[in-house]
Amino acid sequence: MKNYTFTVRGQWQGGRQGTGHITSNGLDTDISLAPSMDGQGIGTNPDELLIAAVQSCYLMTLGIHLNAYSIPFESVSIQSEGIVSEEGGLHFQSITHYPILTLEDQATEDTFKAAQEVIASVDQYCMIAKALKGNVDIAVHPTIVRKGSQES
Image 1 (cartoon, rainbow, N blue to C red):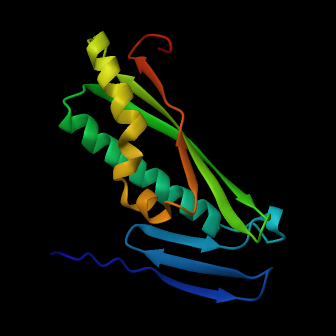
Image 2 (cartoon, rainbow, N blue to C red):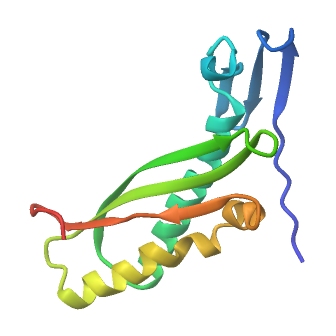
């Protein structure tokens, strides 16, 4: 069995109003608490980073599955929203993805049906979403369109 290692380096100065910096392969950013949590709002924060991790995993897994099922697509764009709750102690309550899948203009009704199945179920294959399972509700509300047409 093969294992994969990922490394992130970081530093922090101060308390709630503090700031820090994290780096990894392809990531180099300042960090602080969000203003809504009485932080400075400098750079990004752990909440946005968690959403970004789940979102990027979903996007990559979706692309891999669309290709595996030979679904011709032009692009995928996405917005994701995370809800943090204070009820029962500060915790991530949910993450909702709103992907927009643009199929190529020759997409048939069968292609639409196959795309709907893939886009709605692919999060179960994402290792980041699987790591959160049972702790964070993850939902997907997709939109599928054909290139050059309106929503389907």
